[in-house]
Image 1 (cartoon, rainbow, N blue to C red):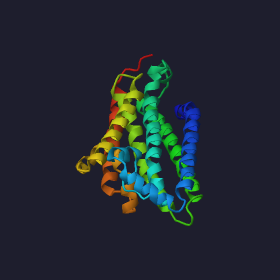
Image 2 (image 1 turned 45 degrees about the horizontal axis):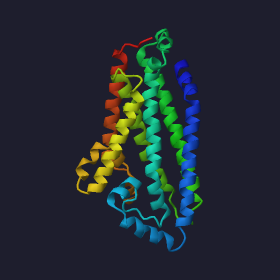
Image 3 (image 1 turned 180 degrees about the vertical axis):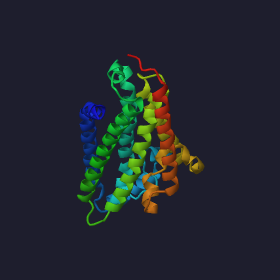
Image 4 (image 1 turned 90 degrees about the horizontal axis):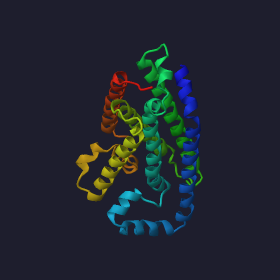
Length: 267
């Protein structure tokens, strides 16, 4: 338990910064809707976005979402929310494992009268709490920010569905980050490699949107598992992608424990 609280204390400042950054993103993003929701302006914006090249539509996360509705606009903003939250989760998962070797504090762990598995469990538990806190702040911030511009439109269920998908993405990238840090003997590069993997999967999702003929490759990128367009149109999270996400999480978790227990912690 001491390791758990040590990790919570260590990530406290960065978690506060990430939460403040997420709130700022929500406030700044939704404030733009005030100007777009002027009668006639939103339709003009929809037409403008439709005339944009597919590549720009994919990058901005516009697609076929209706920007004249608060749910459609939030769906576009959700892409940036997801990017920010998954970057936090991936880097947290990687650094919480690799930092002991990187910062030369591994001897602190080696003298503890507990097994490596228990050490790792405490670390992952602390990372999970960090992910839950950021998701909770994002959920509450989204509900409050969207409510200010909803004009009676009930979007709470849509937001909570998207937050559920976001939580799945956060967990997946957190565990992928921890697996990368545990399996590869590159503690100083673990966060960078995890970020690179995240950006690669995002790039694949953009290519899929641009092409329009590569839907069969959606399983390669978690960003397509719970994208706003699919979730809002279906009104639910895809059970198939949820099961795929859980399977990937289990594989990443197993890889994390196997790699961590076998590696030599350098002091």
